[in-house]
Length: 278
Image (cartoon, rainbow, N blue to C red; front, side, top):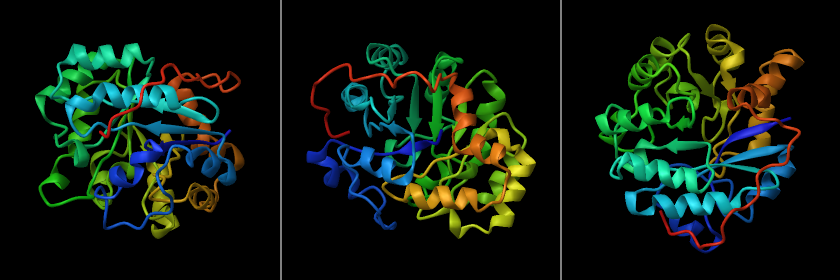
């Protein structure tokens, strides 16, 4: 079972507008449309993909969560969104209404830092119930690049030991030295995406990271549409681990973290409202 834990998509009508200004420095391999994502996953041999919703501002939180809820089903699981400009209880209520088990935090697009006390209030409220997949590292201007550093993630891990946390990009996109120093050995799962491809990283360095951190706490993500899932799966296989270790990275580790029964059907859509742009 292969699970891609890092997929982005938007309603077809707004995908180009939503995606266009986000990461102009990176080439795209896909159109970011929700109608395209299932086919992309199937062609790559991915059994399940985690659709990650992101609300740039607080007013879009519930709309994005409704979109995630109605889009899941078939190959798609759904992680929703929160925003610290919204009261904690309002964020939690939106997740509950939409049956969402986890959220994506993206400091670059949502405009907050991971050491913001309001973010910590949310994380405390999540406990072990709501899982978190978080962007870590660079990807924007100098100011926004300091909103999600490996050290901030380390501090979160130590402050909230019950939190189920996945740190994207091996814990530090283009901050790998810091991630190696601050996060390896901490109780956090590290995710493999490295747009435009993990293959840009030397395999021996990736293996050193995996070996030091523990292969059972590494999970696979592509970051579609910024990277191709099939190519990223090949890069993981190219690390040369045995079949059991590779299977864990490609899906088993994340399923275990989430407590998912992979034999059960993916939850279907709950609502049919149109999602706003956020």
